[in-house]
Each structure stands twice: as C-alpha cells, then as structure tokens.
Length: 89
View 1 (cartoon, rainbow, N blue to C red):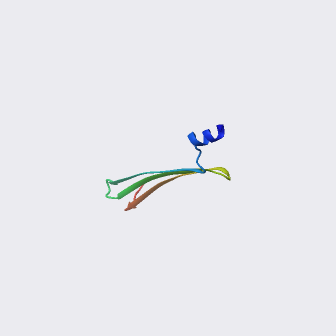
View 2: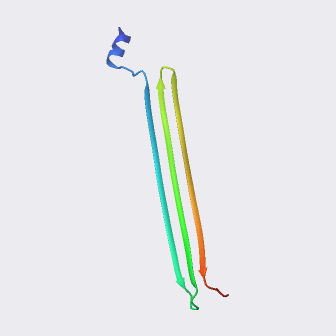
View 3: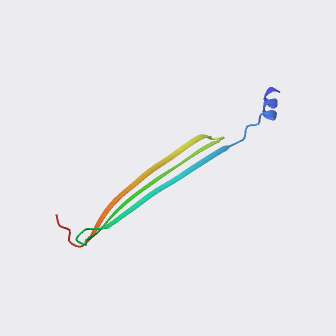
C-alpha cells in the first residue's frame, strides 16, 4: 500500500529531457583615413569579431540517464593599412 500511495501522489515520469543552447556574437570595426602634408592618402582598418556558443542536454529514461555538454569560442582580429601615394621616411 505504501508503494501504491507513493505512485499515486508522487508520480515519477517515465522519461525526462531538458535541453538548453546559447549563442553570442560581438564585432567591432574601425577605419581611419588621413592625408599627409605631401598629399599621400593613408587608410588604416581594424576589425575584431568574437563568437561564443554552448549547448547541453540531459535525458533520463528507463534505460538510464545521460548528460551532454558542448561549448566553443572563437576570436578573429585583423589589421590592414593601405597607402595611395609614395610615403617617404
């Protein structure tokens, strides 16, 4: 009777599954252009990109339980310079 009462008032689901995921991205860019006293045009560019993602999952059933988690991050930085003219020392 105790087991029957427990099953009746505190039922346990046959299986449970929970999943979550996150993604974030951030990027910044800047460009500076100027002309020298001699008329040469110089352009300098900067870029910064960051990405982060994660996911996890939990499953429980009659066959057992499992937990999986994954995450990754990446960052890309770049710099470039262009000159239209003939820069001297």
